[in-house]
Length: 227
Image (tube, rainbow, N blue to C red; front, side):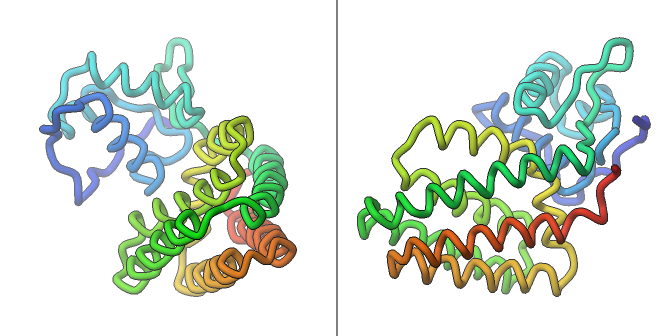
């Protein structure tokens, strides 16, 4: 673990929202996802607090919340450190997510309403628009919302809970899977196939596409991970 001074996010601004806790959590999570707070970074409360324009008390509560999500570790005598996942941990989580999403795909094709599927199509279209405009963070969030949305269509709360927990822990890892124009274009093409299969209610095809998509997600990130 290394202590570094994070570079300010060029898009950051002082937080002046009503829901201060949620705003700080979102900002810190985005900084982790985008790599402004890299894995192994010790979170400097004074510096981050000054950057966001917030006091240490709400900042510490936000850090604790991110620790509950698995994005931050609270290390005795060192404070809060951005969680660094090893390759084996990441592969294990991706394999479970793949299994969950393939199961959800089958159920979604069987029981989802046309309105439900239309809502996923809307997310997809907005995601593609973000891809075309180069808005990578917004694209990523919509991408993850599509995966969560398909899982939600299975109508299984336990499934959604486990999937949500693992997806949260992999936020930074999944984000780097879109680095570079070729990887990003490939990910978008896979999502195009995914939405077409969902709209056709082709459960076998959708399950296969999701399985391949998650396998390729691992291929896109594995070289960037420590053993």
